[in-house]
Image (cartoon, rainbow, N blue to C red; front, side, top):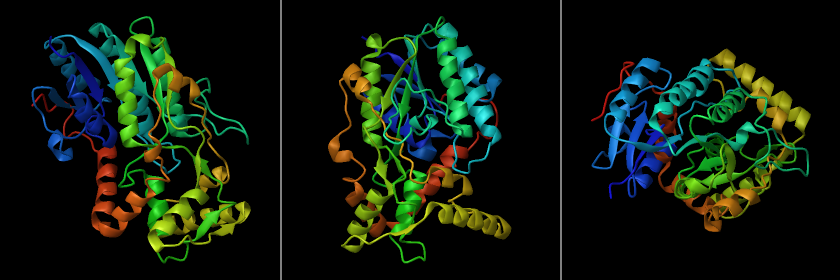
Length: 369
């Protein structure tokens, strides 16, 4: 029996390229991405056909789908492509890629007769709960940041197209690897494991916290969603996340312990003073033409915790993150990579940034190849 075809968007990104490698063992994959597959080490073969295309280019995407329909039936679409940054600014790419690009994809998917379209949103689209509260599958994606608004629009589209194909919504937490390919975590470790003036500074009580998920756990989650596709309800929301969250203070203790051999004592800066410091640093950086990663908007989240309760998803999928991949347990590997391979550590971050922002050199697809 021939293996079924699956479309993966964002296939040349950090997450999408790894998902393609995972799925090609059991499925045939149409890999849609903004970059050439060879640029990310994605080999094509009998089970992978690549198209280089920008979802915001409706005509280029239409050509790709015309070619796909001529090759046979597609059962699933996994929509991982999306733009994000940590500037806090409303970049036009949120609308062009995350909203218009998603609409283009949905419209062109209607004639495929899909068994499912899996839309990858984010836990970060949800607002931080009040102290003691949690985010769960029923939480509305109403966080007041541009990225969240674009993901909320995508989730609305899943429901709007429910009469044309079944969809579901996957909300991952912050995805990291042993090379720390998650930008905030990269900056934390790069600062804490150094002798800079701010190497021991934590804002507020150090209780700012989000949930982290290892990339290997996200891959196993996506495979489980594909395997259990027929059991998922229309427009169902699933959380790819551990329960709870991990604070800056916990990360700081573990990182400095692994790097220096003993945990350092943090210097806690009261929230009002930390907020002022962020504003001054950003203004100074803009004047110099070198804006730091830390921005003034981040002060609003000092000592807030994005605690998650993903119990319903675990029951629905019979899936749970591997405890050995928890971010605190993986700190040994991350810090060791930072110490032993600092150039590769920084190069991987740069590669990820390029993958996130790269556009095709022309609107038409550069494939299949």
